Amino acid sequence: MGRFMLMILVFSSLVCTGILAETAADDVQWGRFRGPNGTGVSHATTVPVEWTDGDYNWKVEVPGAGHSSPVVWDHRIYLTSSDRATATRTVLCLDTSDGRTLWRRDYTSEAYRQHGHNNYASATPAADARGVVVTWTTPEQVVLLALDPSGDEMWRRDLGPFVGARGSGTSPIIAGDLVVLANDQEDPNQLPENMNRPEPIPHVGKSFLIAVDRRTGKTRWQLNRRTGIAAYSTPCIFPRADGTADAIFTSTAHGITAVDLATGRVRWEAADMLPERCVGSPVFGPGLVIGGFGRGLRGTRYVALRPGSRAEGVEPTLAFDVTTSVPLVPTPLVTDGRLFLWADDGVVTCIDLATGRTVWRERVGGSFYSSPVCVDGRLYCANRDGEIVVLAAAGKFEILARVELGEPCFATPAVAGGVMYWRTGGHLFSLGGKRRSVGVAAC
Image (cartoon, rainbow, N blue to C red; front, top):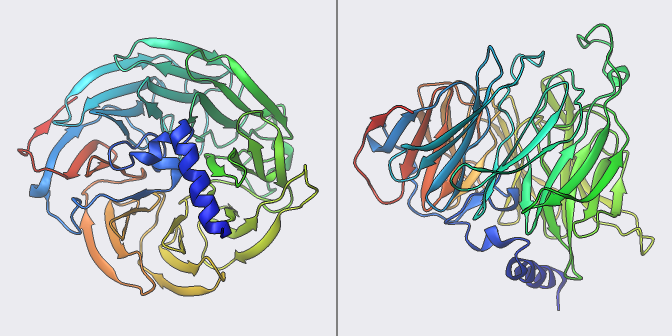
């Protein structure tokens, strides 16, 4: 049996056991940042290539501000927002059919310094049939909070203080009966000299990875980490040939780390691969784990590694790397044997996964914080001004459409039930699927 076919069978086994259950229903659910296992891939066939304002199913106002992405489970959309002045955090639950608010929960907090393009609601929620899990930080605490589908609190964790000169942004994920969160904080003494560092320099943050019980919030495992430059990436789950799964994390201090999802033990680590800030999240392809880093406003390098095994004495090895026009913030996308790197400055690169060869590299223009998603063989990504660029996810570069949202957009869309949901600075849009009557409502 070929290695690729074996990995497919292992992946199917993990779906059946519930570790990757969301993937089996990726046309219905979109339960975390970038959807099923963070792939950003949907097989929906009811999302248009191009459209006008009259084609939206509905458009609703969203209170406050936020850069987090919507997530969808069954008929519920979960979204976080915040008040710029008070840092009050808001969790919203909306109905997919018409955008009406099913419930809203507000949590008092405090304002603190962060990057001018960051936001108090930058972390995307994670959802499943039990409800939604959200996280946010202040200098005093990292909050991990679970609410049931009715908005009632299930459990809450205070994971201790957070140190990060630019704020936070990593999102939780739900993997079977676990909630997994990366908490890679900052050692201010490791920040670049040309960065506007806070004075006086605060203490070094306490970094760790944690998995808690989905039902109770109790710690199942915790892995303490060295502290470097705060990371913003969200983990993904990598299926192994032996039927188990690894959670993949990226950070400055540890590079790329694979952690046994069940036990919290490190399977392998490539510690020197990512020496600067990790913002975009790791992804994977057949037999490859992919992660990157950057500095300032630009990506520096993306690497594709063949996994190793400490137990077997096998080190991870570099399959290929890309150092030209790579993203800092947008997360890459893997589909149909190709890796797509959508850089912050609007340069998109298509890489052949089997060889690491650049198939094409073209500029689409604009400045991007949103990450691309792939729907029915097309890439959709919105620039910061709110223009959506639609490309063919193919071996030939082709711009299929450009559509204006009319508002700034930093968030990545969700696609569930054949419908695409866009979050802008002030609204949430529903597009595609079975056509409904068009309306505008306020939360």
